[in-house]
Length: 81
Figure 1 (cartoon, rainbow, N blue to C red):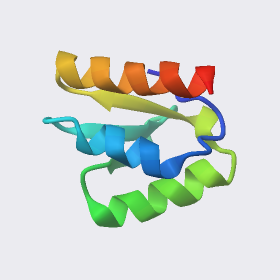
Figure 2: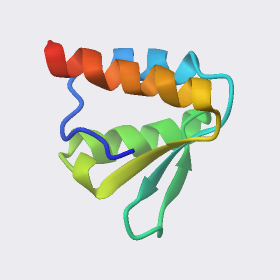
Figure 3: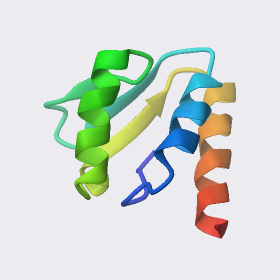
C-alpha cells in the first residue's frame, strides 16, 4: 500500500506496526531499499526517511491479511485527524 506523505504521529504508526503479528516491510518504490519495520535498527532508518517528507517514495507491505487491515485502519484514522 502506498504511504501517506508526512506521517506526523510516528508513535501511533509504530503502535500500528507493533500490533501486527507478521512481517511488515517498508520498500522504496524502485525496490532498492527494503526495511523490516519489526527491526529496531530499520526503524531508525525508516523514521529518517519518513520525517524528511520522502513518504511518497515508499510502499508498505504486510504479509498477513489481518495485519494489512490493521495498517489500513491506521491510515484511515490519521486521514480523519
